[in-house]
Length: 323
Image (cartoon, rainbow, N blue to C red; front, side):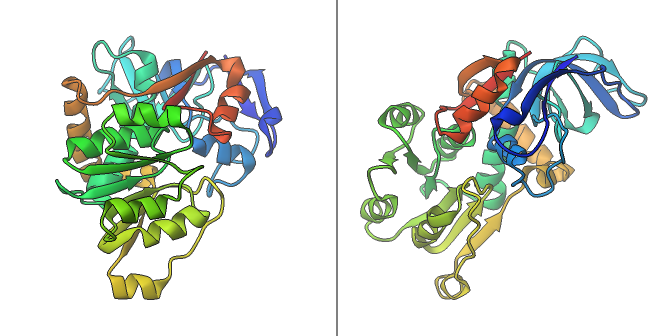
C-alpha cells in the first residue's frame, strides 16, 4: 500500500510517500480500505515531536478515517466486509489501508460521503464532550469558542447553538468569520484585529462567559481565564501554540472557576460516556442538524501541503486527504 510516513521529527519535509506491505487485522481488529482521512492539528504536533505520548519516527500519521471494511479479525461481529465505516485510530490514517480496533469503528450513515465521514469523529466527539460532558452547557448560557473556523470549532458552533447557547466565536480572517456566522455564531471576533477579551466583556456587560473552549494555550489561555464569569468553566482540549500555561489558583479559588482538561482518546475508552455522546451526535446527523464542514480535499501525496494549511491557519473546517 502507499502511505505517508514521518521519517524524522521536524518540518513537512519529513513527510515521505512510501510503499509498505498491506496490514492484516488481528483478533478484535478491522482492516479498512481508506477512502478519506481527516487531518487534525495533533498530526502537526506529532510530526514536530510536541504531542505527549506521540509515536516515534518512523510512523504513519492520521487519527480518523472513512472507508470500506476489507477484512475482519477473529471475534469481530459488529461490521462485515464491504460495509461503509468511519473510525478513530491512534495513527496510520495517511495511507491506503489501516487496521483499527473494532471498538473505534462506527457504521457510516447511508448517503454520507467519505469526506464528510472523515471530518466527523474527532471534531464532533471532541466538541460534544467539551460542551456537554465537561462543560455542562445549558440553554441561555454564553460560550466563547476559539479557532471557531477550524474542524472542532465549526462542530462546536453548531452543537452549541443546538444546545440553546449564545456563541461568541474567534477566527483569524473576515472570510472565516462570515462562514462561522452562517453556522449560527452570534458574535464574531477577528482576533488579529480586536482584543477578544475586551469584546467579550463588552457584549456580556462586563460579566464574562459561562464556558470557554480553548485549544491554543499561551496568552489565549490567560485571557480566556479572565473572560470567565463566576462559576465559569474553561475546557482545554489542545495546546496549538505549544505554550502550556498554568492557571492562577488564587483566581480559581476566589472566583469559583473550573479548568478542565479533555483528551478524546481517554473519553472514547469510557463506554458510558462515549455511548451518550454517540447517541446524541448520530441523532443530529440523521436529521441533518449538524453538517461536517470540509474546507479542503487533497491527494495523499499532498500531505505536506495539507499539514501546512493547518500549521499556517489557512484552513476552514476540515482538511481531508484521499489516497
